Length: 536
Image 1 (cartoon, rainbow, N blue to C red):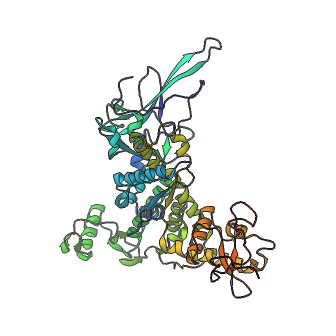
Image 2: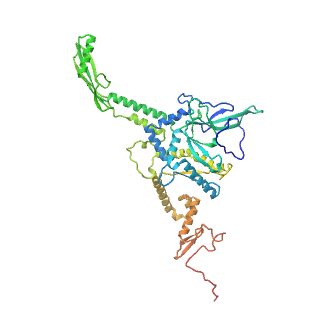
Image 3: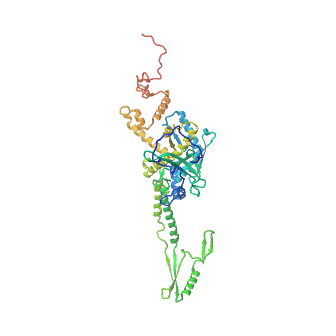
């Protein structure tokens, strides 16, 4: 294999055994045999020959008005824009490392957001990934000083780059089975596009130099990466054809037209036709409105299908007659159009209620939320998890280049990294207020049983839903507000005699290590004597 462009980050030691089959390609990479050549593959259905055709189809249907409306609803729910807060934050509570390492990782994540310009382009990045079903970024570094980290993240058009896996096999001497010897992965970049002439040629790039994230939707037959818009291809085409046919039908059937039966007597055919034309030119509409210029022009020489009909009638008939041909009936019915619009929204997992602009939206309790809205929220959360590997991959490269962590430490850190996306402020506030109200009502109902059947810690965890860290911070704040040392575990409570009773539940019971000597009665106004009083 030729020398690859870019850089490569390796572990101290490679792990893994041998197998007769290659790992599953969940990223749509093209598999080629060792010593072979790269070639495009054909789809068996004969519709989209390459990934380039698919991406162009996705981008085409995304421009349709109804499809664009549904996509905007999805993007707005996935990436919430706010004037004060950032759209996404990293959560490192479960990482088994010191606070110094956590702070360094948080700072580097902020740098990743800055390189992506996510605060201002987050909506566009998420939409580009959602429509294309994949997204590529080139991680540019300073080759002379790689410890500076990533200097620029440059977007690469999905139609110009493709991931390729080169599989080398060797035959096992004992069993005769072809075992996987080595798998080399690289990206193939072609400036003219992978669907053009000479698409098999291009720049081979190290996979570590490219950040590549797919939609996670894989065609089981071809192994090709699909977009979330793939299900909407057929509904969009059907809706487009129905709308076009509706327009043609209404233009052709809307006006009322007249039928002129002209009595030609016993005239020969040629003279009868000439007589019919003379009558038609005498009475037909001679002036035509030109919509392009806004002028009235004479257009006698052309007769469209929207104008009147002129028919000859021989002698013996009823003579000259004029009748009216009525226009199309039921032109206001659009149930079929609404059906395909609903079908399009269902294919994109968007609630049907969002299609109807005239429907009123109420901000009520969470119990009033429809099942469709709940399913839509879960769908948005699911596609967020498919999108966050973009952050994780760039963050990994940044941490390894700056030597904050080692390649061997990254797997244990990666599995504990979580991301907190900004929710819609108003709706989130309503939800939190409702949940807090319900929890307080439950607490009031079981308050009489706290200390007998339920412990204080159980109530804090199961009723109020507080974490251990929140319980600790809450206790420190209570101690500070009561005038005690925040690090002290006890709290001050009033007793039956007007004094203050010390509750040392958090610090331990009397007699236990770390517990105070006396935890029954504590009065800060009582001052112990400076010296021992003489015995009487």
